[in-house]
Length: 223
Image (cartoon, rainbow, N blue to C red):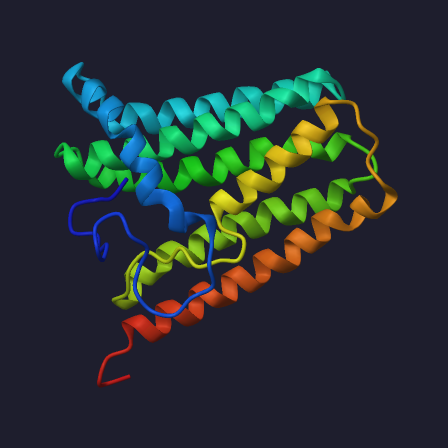
């Protein structure tokens, strides 16, 4: 969700300018499907902050629960929850923008909840071979830095950046596919041990893209 005064160009569309494509580009259509449900939630008195906290709590509980359960059918819950989480994230944004629920607290909650949720949903992969727990930890840290790089655009006069190639929606797709594969008890090829390091490299590229785009968009005559 967005705090009062936070810049967003073009409503639900990503910020303007040349940038690497990401699954975030389909968000406006996704929101269109969810808008009637968001309206009903608003009418029932549900707030954007409540939705944000619910999404974070669900992610924390599920991530820890699946990690404790270990390899098995529990991993099938990951792709299901990741889809639900994306829907909740879209709904809390709509409640904030379209139903007058923007707040400074909401802006803090939104960013903190994303980082905490990402870390929790990566945790189950740290206990699955051939993934390296260190690589999973590196991905969690870089995912947090990616979101930080995105929101830092606001401090230099740019918009909140959502540049790819490994934004939040893209990470959800990868983790959901892995969860489905593991949950169906299909063996992971040895080469997938490198997958987390590949994700780490893509996250580094995403950070660079967001910083460059933010600097370019926020540059003024004096810069």
